[in-house]
Length: 351
Image (cartoon, rainbow, N blue to C red):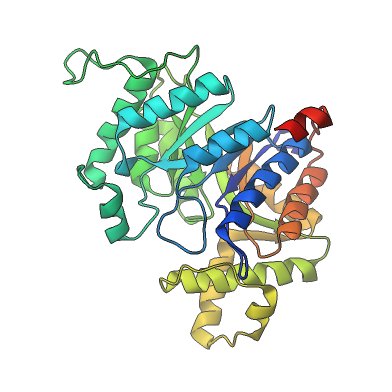
């Protein structure tokens, strides 16, 4: 069956990128402005990422930004993409998101990930005083869900402990994955899978088959549900898209070397002299990207929707120029004819 554009749902993943010459405050304010912009355009949900110890991304506390952005918007779902649960108490995460569910009922998502979102020493600092290790991650997912729905097994050592405040509903729970481990956990616990294609495109087919084939229905989700995280930059012309993505090329190349700095400008990228090995690396990294004109971007996304039987894409669009980033989401919305939302301007200004 061929997917048509009207069946595809679009959402946003925001890492709050800091640009060369900009500040973390700029990045956070741009996240708020971008959320308001894409809500009007018709995007479904807005997720905030978690990264630590980097001068290039201003997002170590997604739960704080979820609160701020949900306050600045009116209808769009808002959530974490995700909370790196391996660092934290499942009980505390459950309580935090129960507060959010009370403040913004029916609008909160809780995406959780296993990756550290940091280097090894920073991960140790985050888990100071707690058990560290990915071997605890499955138990933390199980316990976090148990606290959210008030159903820990009777034999659990914390049975009877309640996460408060009570809420009429619970956030949607998603497992972020780019590998077999987290994919299997999403299937085992009956949770939604948000697959990071922009991190690991090579294994996508196999891992989605694994998730769907092994999915166990739960009180949280009756059947498997997949969203896909993709990196997209859209511009009016191929030349402009190429110029925009050049910043990302250099930024990713530096990150691969452990240099996690601000997003360089296209001018900085144009002045950089790439070695032959670096050019190969850039070409390899570009296999994880979609960029170009609206027609090209639309065609590639629709092909992915058909191939992976996926009807929701969560789009990451880091680039140097914020206006170009806003325009990229706008062009995608126009290409797929998203239904725009209309709000009372005075109410929006008050937020």
